[in-house]
Length: 110
Length: 111
Image 1 (cartoon, chains in turn red, cyan):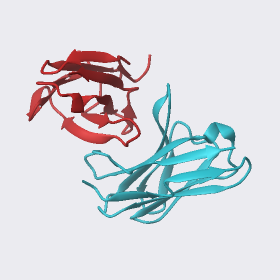
Image 2: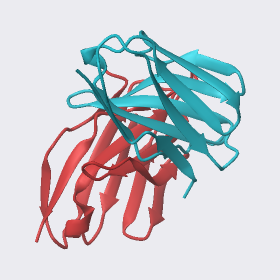
Image 3: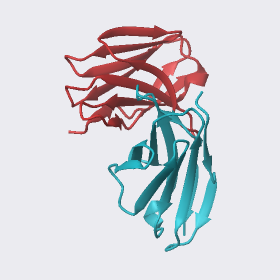
């Protein structure tokens, strides 16, 4: 079992819809969770961090964490074509390493 | 955004030659990282540093070495480049909260 898993996609959503990106992790002791966005040919950029169970909202982005289910998600409301990118989930494990998932490719169709 | 730069941005070299990539950050971050990113593999950690002269191996460290003589600089050396090391290399830095900020990347081609 890989330590951090994501659906590779591509995930296609129409403009204005909600995009839902999912991530699962294997280390139950993980405490910190991060979402990064990476445009083609560019470096990853941090979107959000989440550390406790529940929802965390920042503009059109909402991160959701459920430690019992070992699941973290990112919702993008009112999706725009400029949101088309690869989204990377990263998890800080109990042994103090940050592990990145393989990423989910999102395409927002105008 | 963290001020983090990488040099060179592009490099073409030949098999068997040593190559050094440089990462420079101006955020006084304690932690620095080197990753490579390849299609189908995502981001893979090569080496990381948790302080000046304190480094440790990541998951794909064979053939690579690092040095950190100053807080702001983290060097990655390919001791004898091979074609399998053709990749995009990213440097990142973070504070204690592990929020990593990435440099623009170096595209390395080994012929």
